[in-house]
Figure (tube, rainbow, N blue to C red):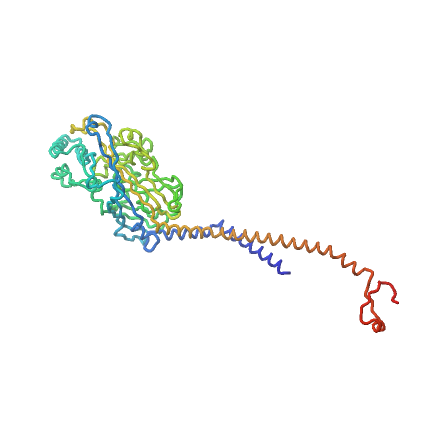
Length: 519
């Protein structure tokens, strides 16, 4: 056997081996399974893991934008006209988040922590100075007190007298700073003299700068990767007590800061939000890309804030049968000390049209008012997010308060927030590197198959060339055989010469015709 056939057989054996091994690995998904299992072990809320430190102190900058609605036709509204509001904002703050008092529990299966937030004003990203700019809006403390005492003739009469004595009306003008971070309200100060538990200071973000929202206990994902970041308890309780059904009081999902790896487009993402005093769900909307990182966009569907008629599961969020609001609204008074606070998406996005039509100045648009999360499906990392919510006050006729007698039931917008984050460049580079490793390792069997296909091509070329050379050799043999035959069967032949002739003629070879006698 020559070297050439040996080489061809060797290439064939290598080709077959690569194809068999590669296809087997692809079918069995050995490398992909190995990589994903390794990834699940890395993405756990345990000391020393890839994500633990960034979970405790998230590196990407978070921005909180506040938009207020300035009330421009108070007198006409009190006479029955539609309220006219003008949006003012944003007033932007850099939000710093970190988790403190972190403790591992149950052999690293769970972890407890307090979520702290602090805010620093950013003048260059804002429309004005919050200490100077004033907003004319609903007098929230007055409406809270009036709702608290309604139904009691004596208490209502007393509060009405107090409101007149301290000059507290249905609407008020306050600076942005006062509305956000607090001011001493004269009516609350008067009420606190007889009810010491009542706070004198009111602010939409009062006591929320540099504070926490209670202790959380999370699953680390060590036992089950699908439980990564899931909230087990809040303030020591595994269920809420604000609502009227077990389903509504359930604490589901994460707190919005962590999501399990290997996300699926068909699954629902659950988030527990203390600000709304409930859990909400989000569903896949579309594929997006942020800084070169592929992501799934999840967003709350209309059913989250749908009416009980549209979504019967939401009946448990009705404070009472008479206080069950329509689609797009959630009355959160049970966790706001009875204040008539109603939550919605900005400009009543995804809500009934009647709420939009009732206010001049509402213009819901998805690109400006939608809440969404862009999550990398492999790692569960948040690459971009916008949390948008609106605070409204329910104003209506309240017996015992003559100033409200001409008012219709109105969901009155006060402010909405836009809390946004985009992954920073350093974190994006780390995620891209990790995704590259996952892709290379997961697709390694495909490289083997590709190499096998390449070797198959080489094998085929070698076979073709070998066959061609073999055919050429056969053709050469056919043409050269008659030629050699004529030389042996011709008219001349070698004949020996005698010594005598050698002496006479010298040394030479004499060719004589074959068969003829020599002279």
